[in-house]
Image (tube, rainbow, N blue to C red; front, top):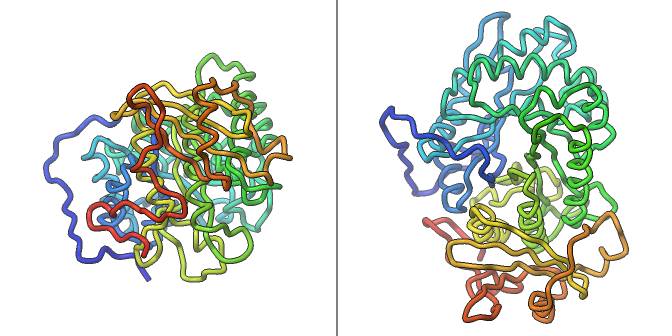
Length: 436
């Protein structure tokens, strides 16, 4: 069943003039969508991104849907909604991130691309896609979770980093030739797979990218707290810095999320919301993290026991989950052009500070006791100044963050921020549904 807009009409702006996209250095906050799989439509996606204040979306352009006969490339009907949504973002001076991914039965048995012929064909496909989307898209990610063998035939649990770099080399050249302004993003690893990244760096992979990407889920770790994901990102950043390639290589988190299914890997809707706030503010305090695409915008299925069906910020019937409301309220904080700082409190918590259109803010939370006994689940920050340390007395013991504003010479809890247990959820914007 497709997710459809209800009683809401969206019209793409007309006209052919090109609006320059956002600064390539600007931080991006968006969500993954599955328009390619027919699980929504461009109007609904854009409406929900706009209402949440998000700047981007991420979706696939499967090679198998572009080249059905060798040498004949054409966007399929299934690509139409992706293209409409990308054009819509372009008209808003924003840009989608498109994934060039997965094999084609015409080459290398339809699995991971390792042959010279397959790599050349993949490069032609990349060139075709980039030219087809033109100025409306300026970020391209090469493959998706190669490190775990995603897309391999026969299925394997590992994709060789050297083979990936060989494909990336050809694809990167094709992307840059088709659009010199495009950002080439490499890696897209499932988890922060440091062993694979070491092999990638040793194979000279950094030479072929403008940025690297990871999917920093914590579902399969010892504990699920988002601070542990930030710790892993720090280790990867240190590895990239040590490679000393002579230029900055930022990190994009192109998948991150917490499913709200019942059973294995599932968390409560409240926990998914608080983890989003904590991850986003800590990620934003790292200047080398240039964007986060939350997984997913919409739930992907109808089985409440399957994690993959419950990653969405919005349910299948378009109810806004608490995490969507938090994402909406977080967006103006993390997208502001500001200096960010993060601290640890003596009370085993965190404080992240920044400035937005309303002035100075501080997001603070306590760490749950179950997470404090795990070193890899925490990061090292400077100690909080006394004035920020004092905020610890006002925090929820379950780790849900509180937003403070600096007004009248003092820090005060923001009355418009989401309240404990979501007793006061702000009205849904643009007629979107909120939880009952």
